[in-house]
Length: 248
Image (spheres, helix red, strand yellow):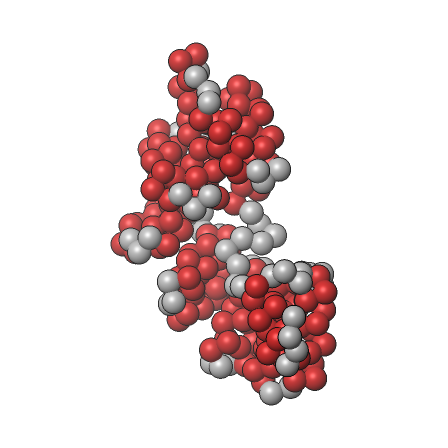
């Protein structure tokens, strides 16, 4: 789809402290798999560890990576167990921020909105308001078919960072697809493309916004570019068929 939870700002791009790096020495192979986006092998590696010889901090570091792996694999109930361990017992402030953000996302995805609100409030009160947090919650709201809530979160992300392309693109797509404000949708999507011209999702969103405005000529130009970059992307293929009238 053209709306994204993560894009140029992956949750795991947040770096921990030097102490966290030291804590991770016993799980380096799992981290290597994780950094290569091989979530299944990373999870197997982490689960294979005998933690009898681990220090308390090393166990928290392992819990951190297990929580992220389960989140990536959409095994949310398992993820919650480990993310909660980090939040309640960890000492690395950045790790706790990241895990609270992941918890908020999972709670929205699993329709536990009050718990999501609690995590968001904790983050805000701790001074951790960020575009990434609001993009996460916006994406979750979108998946729950709550476009109005999603738009509100994307607005907050843009209030903090007016050049955040994830928020621009996703908000533009929702405004266009819903027909709520197609003119603004085009402006937002165009800005995202100007900043990241080789992102297929951004090109697709811009093309779809033009299509919704009735400009099929411009729509075809941008969606064909998106299709060239990502021909297997389901939503781009669907838009390509609609705009070009072609069969794949």
